[in-house]
Image (cartoon, rainbow, N blue to C red; front, top):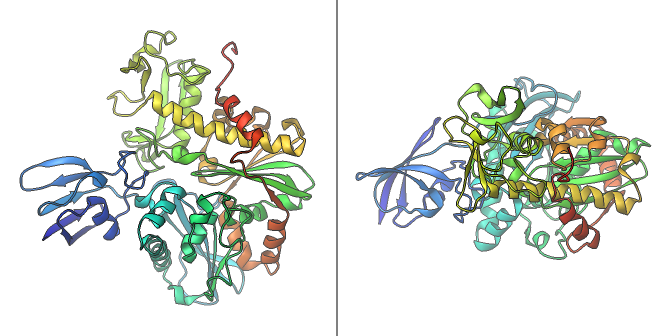
Length: 504
């Protein structure tokens, strides 16, 4: 039996038929509605909340835990707009005349950014960006690999979703895929495999080796190119970003860091790089956090504490609906500075909190604190949230320490810290250092690269020797697999601490 379903978001309305017993999330996915489902639809994250209206009642439900049983209307908020990083420069107007056109695509797990390029002179003709349309299938690459393996059509579904989104971005700039001489893609190894239709499962299982480090002959698709990958978890976005940074030509020894749903890093310079990746998880993108959300309108993006108490900024200047990654790092730094979070990571209750802080806190059933950010107490941080952020920051910090140790270097031997990607661009380095995620010694020597992956992809289109450079750069990278690495296993628990308890 089929039922009539109406789906409404702020920007569009769709009417469709759905089979009895079909999952609401499956219907939303099929109709192209991009909703948050960080856990991939397993009921663990609580992010796919929608309003379900039937003849009997109207209620808020999880789309992944409710099924179609009658004619109904689904009201949903799509993942649209917000703070997506193009590059440091502002986007330019769309092209009006088709010449020798190509496109560079930064294929991120969370966001997708496309730039149109005129090959005749290398000029940028337009930029378009959106939240990755694969978000309803999971916030991180492992969730998406699971979707590929659990369903016979899983890989084809995700491939079609992202390719359709690419076509829509191009159409928004006034061109079609057939108008392009070349489409150059820079993304992590799993995202590139899915785009190419290659099985990503070997990357998610030991020994974590991809089907292809350089996708080309495997797919035989003319006019489609990919940045070469170093390993299963250090992909083309890193080789493209390293090329854009120019670090590979400098005699300095520096650290390159790209933190997002994955945490990839490279230490070195002109003499080569030592690389690794950490499973920082999607916490820095707001996933897995009770009130976490992407950097959309309504997200708390920065938090400070002064003599007047807690202050925060909200994207779009509207009432706060949640907290995005940069806001979470700031808030955690404030809580550590005020000693509301202990060095070991306990969020204190109101009775144990420092003077002047109790009004923001309540005690949960386990005796831990719940910190309320907004006056209406709709946006808050729990002890479980602190633990998720603690695990994520410890993974990044431990990865940095392992690279230093295996390179025989001290943090003071490094010249600079290069930070790439959207999260890193909006993150306050001082807050990241305060919680122990990045070395405090490097905060005065930070270079923000913006969207280095996109910049590298554009270079691959416009510079005659760029692709040869990418291959040489890939060969100059040595990868350390941290799974089972003794140094990482020693460092990780050490980096769980936010600060020494007697550190004033």
